[in-house]
Length: 264
Ligand code: SF4
Picture (cartoon, rainbow, N blue to C red):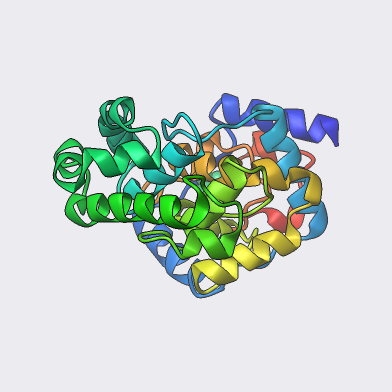
């Protein structure tokens, strides 16, 4: 197994893991994948994929700048339908002024709005950030709660945000399914599902426990930098020979020793 892992990572480093088919074939493959048309990976394939993610990046980290659980929560709320890079441009100034719910409430909605105005949907997000700060003070002694129920009761906080906070701030093995994770789950066959919740539950069911803590970051980073929505970089993909997306062709360098059934 170790040889197979190393070989796959080396093939990806050389840009010889796989090749994406022409655009039309990719679109057709994605349409099929998003309707549950990709076969589900076997447990041995899932184990091998995460062994590779771990070998390539043993300690994956989230990219949102934060100082403490409260600023993490605020950063995740601000990141809805926005990029982490965009959020990170605005938050250092915001967090320098307000890194606790008390300071955020004191700063006030107009000032918060002004500081986050480069982020999409900033008006509503600024309102939610101040409102959730008020609620944290009123109901949780100014602390970020570590339960899903309490987090999802905060303004602007949904299941995905709660999952990120539970995972990153409290070390719980949750799975936040954003657009990247949803795409990878369906495209590859790791966790096919018709909506984010179905993919989340499938990922929790199939990912071996020992990989759960970092699985969320490995998948997000894979979607952000390799398995891109419009132009997947299959040539540099460390799981290309395992991936069952019909929009790519496995190359010889990665095929050697791989599971024949996984070849496109
Ligand atoms: S997981 Fe890898 S091989 Fe599969 S579509 Fe994404 S980039 Fe291509």
